[in-house]
Image (cartoon, rainbow, N blue to C red; front, side, top):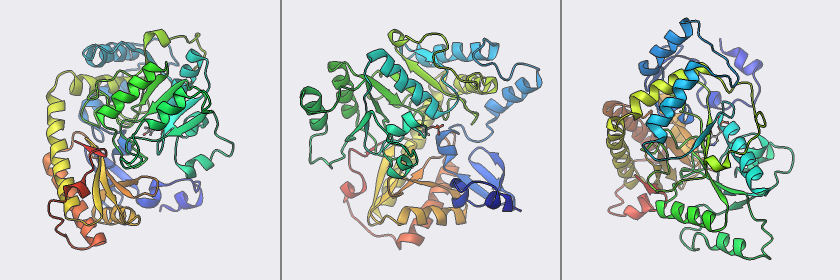
Length: 435
Ligand SMILES: *Cc1c(COP(=O)(O)O)cnc(C)c1O
């Protein structure tokens, strides 16, 4: 019955290879395939489903909107749905955090917001160069790809990816080289040959690149360096934002205020495509229509986004519940890592996972998890990390059940539990983990 996917659809498809079933129904943290098999979804659309599948909180207003005869597509025209989204985003997100940002709708995907950010940074500074980090992932269009690390993805460009250089992410040298030595040196040395960049773009946790989490102190130093050298700081919060790390923006704990912020994946709250580019008002130097796009006015996405912001972010209850789920997840990940040789914990909040010395292990664990009813993906340059991204709305019981399945899959692949004693360092290096 699924023949058409194999015969007609391009070979470029990927997730459907890991999970070769037709998913027919979805609710919360569960998906059901055509044969009636249920899966716990700890992938969450790569972070596009932070509130789970078909959350009634967003589905009810969405269904009502669709049946009301209201506008679905509106380019960048004014509609009540868009107005209510902007009002809610201002009241619930920006003002309580004293963030001064203007809001741009750049087209509905993550790579669209990254492209807008890079373009704006170049326009504002008059500089071409952008610095990005080892193992960064920022999207698949040429501008975003030029600041992405993965060599397989970069080769897909087919042309040279220019006007950007890579700099080492937090702890890239395992503590052997001071983190900003290279960056400070080249910025100050007029003979370094590294053109002064318009911007530095960073993920606070590297979602696709192996779930390394930058330390708060590292992010603060990065922000200071940008200020000292008059370089714009762009935080790509496409995956880490919208609550994934425990706060709405992933940089809140670090206490930094980036010049530009990219949001997409879970901003609509429903899995509908939507993206935002936020920037300091003085950067708003666009001419009308200078950057546009047909699908910037996806009104159903505005409706679900507004509903999600009101339900989950208008007070602190959801964030407190999330904090306790994050503790539950990290407690369990650490205990699994301690009883598995060659395993360690990576990531922050609900953007976390387990890294294995054996580069084959993570892929095998993900396949075994699928066989037993758990959807988890791999991450990292060698797919060496099992990525555990339940919806933020997961129940404690679901989280336990999913982690039981994960642990069983790990035992099947790596052998019985071992006692690594109090060798906590092996399980979690400070740079890569912060719950
Ligand atoms: C997914 C992702 C993107 C790209 O988003 P698309 O919607 O796939 O274009 C960009 N940056 C980060 C950090 C991402 O995780």
